[in-house]
Length: 466
Image (cartoon, rainbow, N blue to C red; front, top):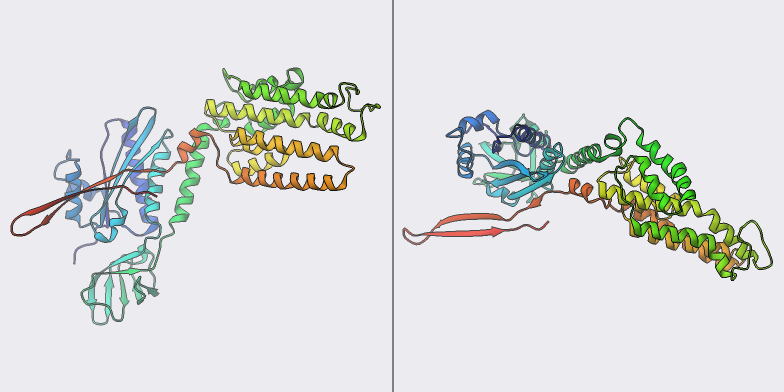
């Protein structure tokens, strides 16, 4: 019986740059930490790997493969990290040696512009490999009616009953650190492994890694660490909505929404001209719609009713003028979304993006979608909700029409809030950081004995779609 030296070997291809060398070390440590927390593959100590390499500078795949075979591990990982323009690229090859783990074979590439995210992304890919992975326990020794299994407390085993994938009952009588004593009635004498229906808590680990990746991304692109250092970005954001933007639009309707964005620290910002034109047109429409509907005969001010302005028209006139702050606020969100996308910054309150989007959608039609960068959808919800609200106000004396309008408005508002909560932010730089690894095709070469002394060589290229 060989000494327990580990189930998985992690080989790293060293880099010359000090920054990359440190990043490789952090990534190796992070992967090891995830492996230890999930309890399926015991990592081989790094010193053992270095001593096993025939030459200190021999970092070829063949050399790694030979060392892994000599250590009798179940699988091994080859990790390399390098610069790719303005991003960091990490390649991780997962190579199984035990046929039980052939389904884990991967060539994974992860990318990031945030250094601290590379170890986390690599660790997340390792955790993803553990999803729905049962415990394959090797049978070390058979003692009368009991078996010694190469799995113990480290793998999640404790004294008690378990079941195999074939439905057999396994009774663990005693569980040590890495081995256990178990009873398995009816087991085949030639069987080398048993597969226990016992799964690691991979989803919990993945969720924790995702939260850390999001936190690092927010630190990199958030207003509090970039444009508004030393200020309270949340307070500035609210002040911009409630004070700066309305005042700017009083002076310059439409264009004022762009000018107000400078309060959040944007430098050399450029306006989104289609948004300026649209919001200016909507501003004028709300001022002049009732005038147009009465042939420009009614009084311009909504608080003065004359013979050319019916009660319904008077109510609509009041609604249009009173909802002007809503229009300029939605225009402000539109300009902000454009600035956030083009300058690669994240809004305030983005540590809780779903909750913030829900609140802004509740207060402003389309505001939550625009907060997450979905400007077209935001304007669409604004147009529908404002039209329904105006129709309801105009027909407030007609109970049937009012009920229909309010019901439709409520349904659309609920739809918008649900949409704002569940949709992902549209900022591409943010999506890039949260994106998982890319699975690259795997090339396999095999040599099989044929008839007589001839050999049959086989090559295969496998691509996974997940």
